[in-house]
Length: 265
Image (cartoon, rainbow, N blue to C red; front, side, top):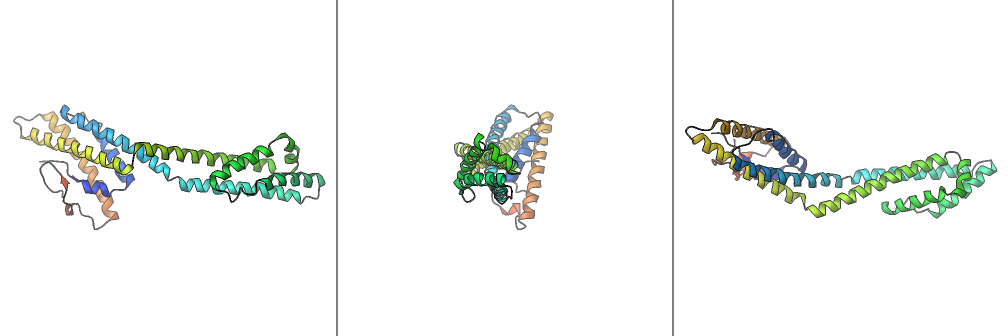
């Protein structure tokens, strides 16, 4: 007699992405079926609701690790700052007195913000914003026009600074949402428990229907499809995990979830 068999401990071993993908695939597959009897639908809805919460936290959890991207953006921003600085410094060596004087005027602004390159990321954002604001004031328009390349490098620095500010704000918002919604580990457990209850009901109703005389063919068909799809997906992710951890064997665990207490093959 068919039944869904899986190990709770196996679900705990999955990486966050694998865990999310497994449940998302199960829900996508079963969502296409017309579930019955009605008693199963309540458990199914609870399972989907638990996974929605997990998935929301997981998506924010992945965004939390945009640290590398933020650091890379900060690096590009510092390069843009150095490009602006080198452009103005080059103008200060010009043989043309008006250009040399204009560059020296702009160098005074750079000196006022000399800490930009070594400042912490968030402080650098404010310093760059203020420096660009000063350089764009009308009194320096003529100087910027005289020193070739200054206007373009100011625009590049402003663009990189804005990209960094938006990325940093997005990450801060995601972290706050994560604090409000709870830990991903707890959400995973809630999903797995809701899934285990759904599986238990599917197995129980399928077995009860198979023992009836006559049995209901529509129940056999629908629940049989559920069992088939879920087992197929679980076996797929067991294979993925086994390739990563060759010593893993499902039968080595002591907590198989199956209505008929059979150990999974």
